[in-house]
Length: 226
Image (cartoon, rainbow, N blue to C red; front, side, top):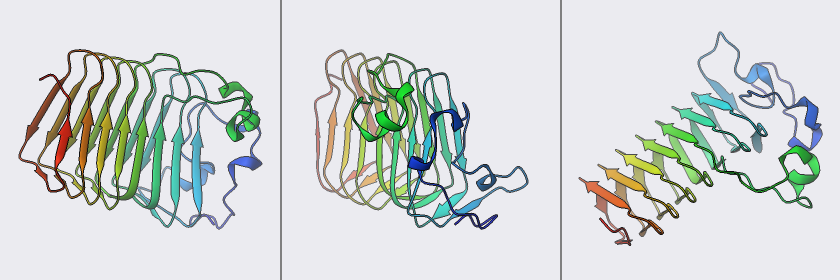
């Protein structure tokens, strides 16, 4: 239930396609009223599905015993998550590939199709997460993870394009896997502790990896050219 109005949070399967706004925070608008700076979620799962177009999703100061999924379709999208603590998994996917026979394909036919190249920006700063899975798809994407504590593993996949990924001043209690795909990618990790295995793959292209002040306790394997 929503802690602001006590309404039952609606499951994504209860929504029709035409009920999804172009810009959305979460499924019930009162979760983020203008006069509040933070929200507590008490739900099993919360989803944000914006469809195609240049979308802007912002989640700030959110806590709760929940899993969260942010899915945007084609278009140059911006996803910003600040000072939030999500007890279960957080999935951010700005390079959506929806199959016609899948659950999302049946619920939202306009999302069906292949990922198109676009330039997405994802920024996650502050807070504690349990598990993070971040996918941006094709295009020149920018990903930033700063001052975050992740108690389980982190998986980042940016797809083809000249991508830039920065991880700074963060702690990851399990494995870190970053696959940047084809293109001239840049990966920078600064002041970060990774307690599990670190696997970094730049893919095809002239890729650059910069690291400073890190503690890769579980060892590191990377295939960057520079």
